[in-house]
Image: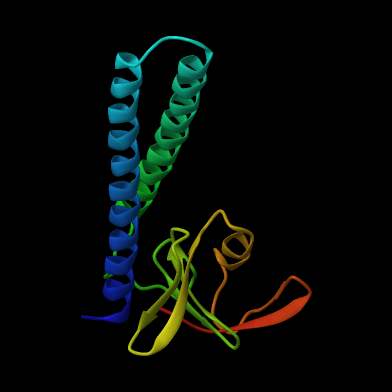
Amino acid sequence: MNIKQELFKQCEAFVNKRAQTVDEIISSNQNALESEAKSSAGDKHETGRAMLQLEMEKASQQFAGIQEMKEILSKINTTKTSKIAHLGSIIFTDTTNYFLSISAGKLTVDENDFFAISVSSPIGKILLGSNENKALSFNGKEIKIREIL
């Protein structure tokens, strides 16, 4: 399996793990809401229900973010290569290696570290559309693109 396919697979696993966590939170909160409904009424009861409702709303927002990440991943073609950075590119710089995809943090393939970053992140916006041997400035530091896959 090539590097790009392995990074893509790790991004998918990242999204699936987040989805599973959010599902567990939603399920747990639904169970808690049901048991709250069976308990006695009063201010404490109402506060507990309100807190659970807030947790459910937060989980729903996280779920929407997960759906967005899945949609972005569905647009990545792991076989496409270009010397111009695009969604799905692996970018080797003189300081760090990047995978333009979703914000999934640090990933490792064959003992090499890559940072999975979104094209809408500050560094992603700078890298998107760049080409090999281009020098860029990010956070006051000079970055030179060595290779794009």
